[in-house]
Amino acid sequence: QWKVAYESLLQENNTLKNSGAEALLASQWRARYELCKKEKEDMANQVDMLKKQLAESKQNMNGNGSSEKYEMKYRDLKESFRLYRKKAKEIFEAQLKGENNPARVVNLSERGTEDAKIAYLRNLMVNYLSSDETVREHMESAIGTILKFSAEDVAKVEKAKEDNPSWF
Image (cartoon, rainbow, N blue to C red):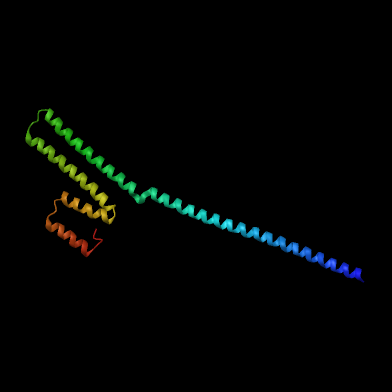
């Protein structure tokens, strides 16, 4: 009788040991799973952060069109300088040919000045139409100077801007 009781307790003990080992093994795997899941989430957050930084750096490299703005200003300046050189060369050649007629030199000079003003005005208008509000305010005064706006003209433009902000 003692032997049967001993064997039944031994069998019950082995069963409990085995089930305890399975529970221990399950808890170890659970801990490993939780650790891997946390590492995955951390990596996903790092990837998202790096993607945002990459997008921001690409946007900064584009500079919201600032490189295009400077490129356009460079081309405008280059064109103005080319016109200036052309007119200066015409005047110089006229003087070399002995055309010291002051009216002729003034006429060439005036025509060159008018061509330069028209080219400058054209460049101003292109830049004006493609710029933001703060740049436009500065350019309006330059356009007014080139076109020789009177005080009444300036006042009329200011009033139109106040009445209708998107007047152009």
